[in-house]
Length: 232
Image (cartoon, rainbow, N blue to C red; front, side, top):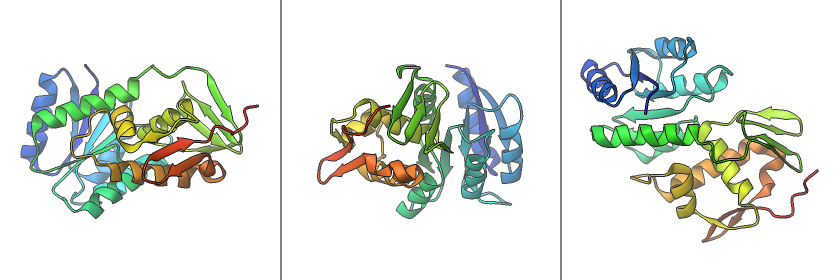
């Protein structure tokens, strides 16, 4: 597997360790020590295929970096893996809320980190979805272009949110357990829990606005995209 990874961390030893191991796996790496530099380099061409982002940076927080990247049309679809010493559950939730695709805590296993990066890139480049558009009620999805509209207004989704939505849509009418969504959308669970699924579904619903009611919650079971949403 190849691609360009932007490593953002103010600790030189962490940057060197991650850079060395990713280079061994065939990745090209670029680095940044500060949050503002990360935002700038993520916008430069060629853009990185994935960003490994520390939360505790000397100028602006990794959370703010993630928020800015998600707000820019140029960088909003770049997958982000947060790598941080913050281990509290609330930090993990906030990370996912601002658009992170995965979250790894320090100290970390280099092997696990590399596997998680590969899994995220595999999800991002997956071509298993049909290239045709999906139109359901007020919701329109351009699968190939990774774009979503609700009532003709474009909605910005992260790569993981987009995969979660298309998984539910393509399996509409069928209940998806949290475990099934973890296996298909996240691919490798690790310390990713069912609470992660709930957090992403909640955030996805908020972004979908008028189309949020299309995703049903079945208590104690999981989620389902309503089968009665009309197609044009």
